[in-house]
Length: 140
Image: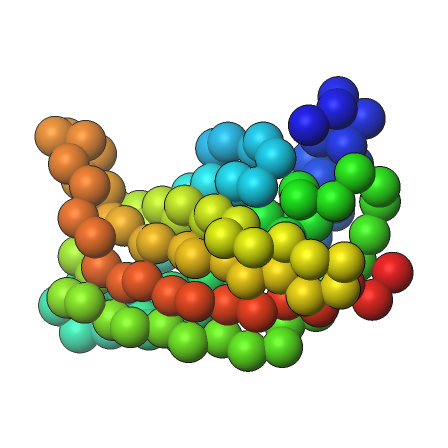
């Protein structure tokens, strides 16, 4: 990834009002891979302190979109065509961590695999809580 492309992604990430609201941070940004961290807030949880499934799906969507954008050399915009999430276990932890990988990047359509983990801050233990397959379409 060129420094200019990384700068475009970071600038886009920093402009997002939703990501600011979530207190999200960009952990890693390279070609065909994006990782995002979101700390737990009460509005994101269900009973017993687990992350809500909607929060996980939102993180999957955002991470997959940025991963798709990272695949292309130029500045571009993508939209979600299809998103499937398998919830593997209750999402208990201090923050969510996404790891989004481009499986296949085409001229218009990209397929992304995004894994979601919860992380315990005291032990740094990652627990795999969701896996997803997402299709994104480049529109610009």
